[in-house]
Image (cartoon, rainbow, N blue to C red; front, side, top):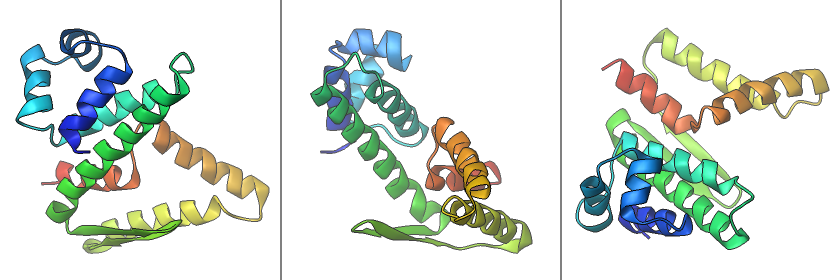
Length: 163
């Protein structure tokens, strides 16, 4: 499935026409949604917006289990497509396999290195044996998640904001 097909699957999982989806959910022109579904797949920040919509709707228990699964798949595809688009631009790579992976990131300057260390330490602390330390770290990571951002998206925003 590509981003165009995922958008169509997202819209259909919500039981909406292009017009309804464009106007009430995506806040885009109907012709833009039609173009995204057929000839020009969504790119950049639009992928993040669509991922956020899919995430929000996947958590809505009013949708069937099958629809929630489709929505979660769409969310993952939108995020992966965004990452594939942005990683080469920011000199980053992600290698996944099984239940783990590696994030390759070029860091320049003490500020970027410090940001990365703090972030990684927060992730490490979230798995700590110290319950209070682990809870604080999990809350910090949850704040990032609730903002609708993956690690790669946050790093990409940092780079894009400084260019």
